[in-house]
Image 1 (cartoon, one colour):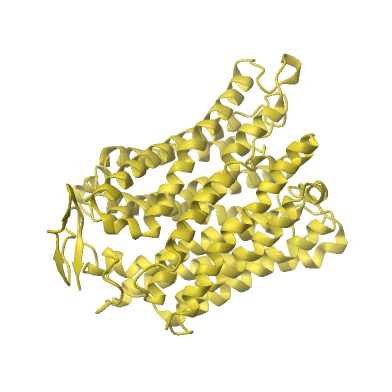
Image 2 (cartoon, helix red, strand yellow):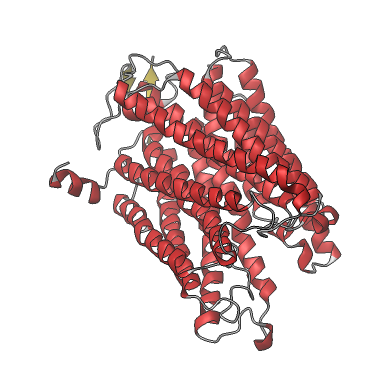
Length: 530
């Protein structure tokens, strides 16, 4: 690679190249996070003998959560595919603010550097940073401060990206009426709005905690008139909507795939899907208190948060039944790996949602709080749901991005291996939680040894499936499995492109006649003649 090519990537303003930068950084971070989880599971192969030290175990638990959420799922789902797809699906040349887009991408590099420094110095406070455990009295390591700086930069990157997405989508919906029927664009709009609302609250909480640690303030110190519960309110006001930030792009992707597979002229229940996502955004921003049932909330507050949490199941059910209806009315082959992955998403996400209904009951949550049951629940919902969304995005958009197709037999094998690994690793954790085993504790009763071994084997199978998927991508590039044709409705703009999509401002090359001469009043929209 020549110097000019390297500089072209470093100083690029092309939304596609920036999306690729996000994706590569996210994939690297994802494998780092997987390696942390494997080290955690290795530690559970023996009930009382710790392969790694107690402090190192706390460092791994902290870093695993932060890396997978802020440096794998968000850069890939939002920064990577969001940057790449929004202008293509909207029919515009780039995002509204391309320089801001490049800045938000490169801000992740110093954020990762601070994260690595925190790992070297040690930060064993958990990814939730609860005071007083994260105060200087209990954790004096500067690694905690570097970890907070890392989150500040990652949050600033996401905030700038969200502002850019909102501006771009407002522009797209103003000039391109047909783009308003893209459920993917609406999903990214709702995601960006959630980020814009919640990230400043997280930044404020972390800043106050930094002041408590380094400047002797007392925002969260009861001795100075502060309240540690205030931090939990501020953190979970961001933390719970963050779950929907990571899953709503997946909702949009699943809806888009089901719509494409069903080959209908319009998304079945489009407004149902749209308002279901809107309801999830509104309700998801109002239920942060269900993470805090054990801090001493009064009965009325606990009942409110419990009730609203259960109500979220209604719009989620609307989406699931809409997807199932579209799949039942499709003529797709039952051996298609895309169909297998979509069904896997629906089954695993629904199962995780059912366990969420259990946890939403404040009485049951008092029993199951901080047990392995909670770990199993959010891994089924957030981790597996978002991870499968990443897999589906790669499978679905890989031909558009590279002009190459993936080996379906290998994808089928990878889907089977992944699902076996997922359920072997996470399903037994429900039993641990019901038995009262606490999370984030590196020793356990010897009678649970064989089940922990099963979980550890499942984690290694899951890690192998991730490596296997990278091999499938590499195989398509090496063997040059060139796409010679594609199918789809002309109402989806990306179905009108030649693949791979060329460079910046050069992708308006269509295999169909395109008529841009329709006008309604003073607004112009894109018409397609198939």
